[in-house]
Length: 368
Image (cartoon, rainbow, N blue to C red; front, side, top):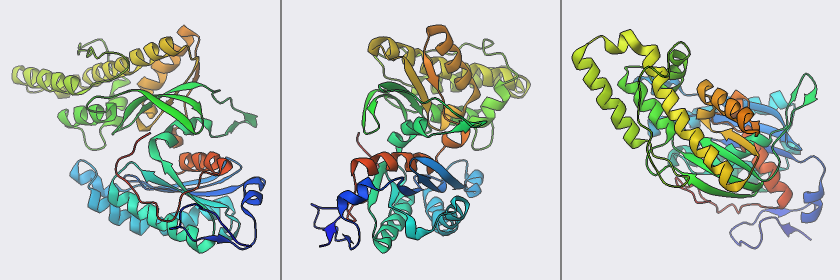
């Protein structure tokens, strides 16, 4: 007798003509096809038993001329990219659609138009293949990128043990997450206004650097003196962050200096970048240090696009050595938006039987 995969939701009428529900959960080495489309990267990954077989990402260069992501253009680019990206991911993984056990996709948060492209494609694919659908929270997936299995020279690399803390830093979010298990997380600190990634990008814009400016600040900071210029550190209670005041301080500083010397930015760019980056990093790490002290957790992780910043990575590793932490940082390819992190999250949700009905909708905002 057929069994509904998504019961008890009557909106989902996908049935299992072959495998009973519990046999599906016990099937060895589940293969997950994952789709990420929350902003301006179209990505598809294939995982088998949690191991990533492929992780294909298509960027969108069209936004550079506008100095930021244009939502309508992002949606159109996703429509153009999603079929070839999924096709390439399957080819690289050496996997046929017929053996895929579930479809995972980014359900929230993100740009709604971009999310709709990925979600509708994922739902259609799940329906046509008659396999379960798995809805994934984008920021939770960033955290779980630290659990992606990987080897270096044939040696399995260590992964954080539970519970662990994760500093998740991106263009739209800055959070400290207490992670008790792959499916049980709690935000214990977050930004009250702007995100750290936005502070990088807005600072870069003030310096006249092209979009995306955050990586360029990192590049110039490598040869600069982070102690050359002093920027304030906001006094925010507990474990929360704020970057709006820092952005204003940087704006006024640059305006004052440029009024005295029109060539100030050009002549001092490395030192300015190093000083801005140094302050943003210190704000992030000082809060993380406080969180570790309050919780007693010794396994700490980075996640999100800004975790690719060399100053943050180096400072995090240095603080870990000083305080005796076990520190974990995802490889660069798993820091920015990617489908591999959706796949590993989908893997754990699959094992827990946490499936979504076909009626599930994309959402620009999300709650934990």
